[in-house]
Image 1 (cartoon, rainbow, N blue to C red):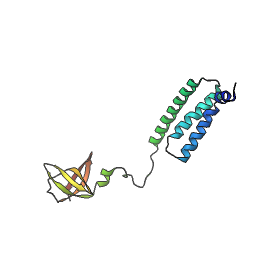
Image 2 (tube, rainbow, N blue to C red):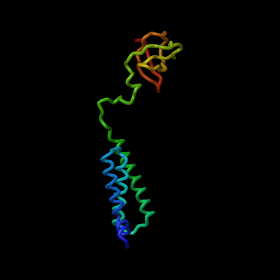
Image 3 (cartoon, rainbow, N blue to C red):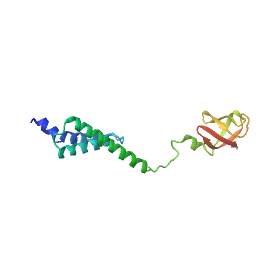
Image 4 (tube, rainbow, N blue to C red):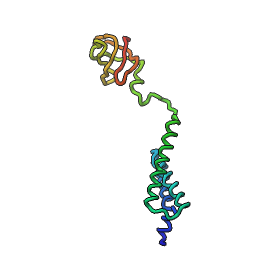
Length: 149
């Protein structure tokens, strides 16, 4: 048996790959390479216990263990809420609630448009003429619900 064959059959390549992937995750964190590292590491240890597995079986084990690691990681991330100083950071509509806007297309029959910042949004609420000020009280999808200010 050649040196490379011995190295491969004893899982050292998988363990080295796991180490390399874990180091890459530390250098450029993105919460993805760590799952590949886990899959490679478990595959390496499996091959240490059952040496001589064909390469195809090793690849299938790697895919299985990586998928399991991704599934477990996803479950853990969903359960672990990350505290933030600004919980509405990525919810632009929720950030608008309570603010005022200027009617740019008259609200007639319950529908119109309001100017918020440098953009115009569809709005629903009581009739209001162009130029009047309304308060944003809620949202339905991307349509703002307004009332007279």
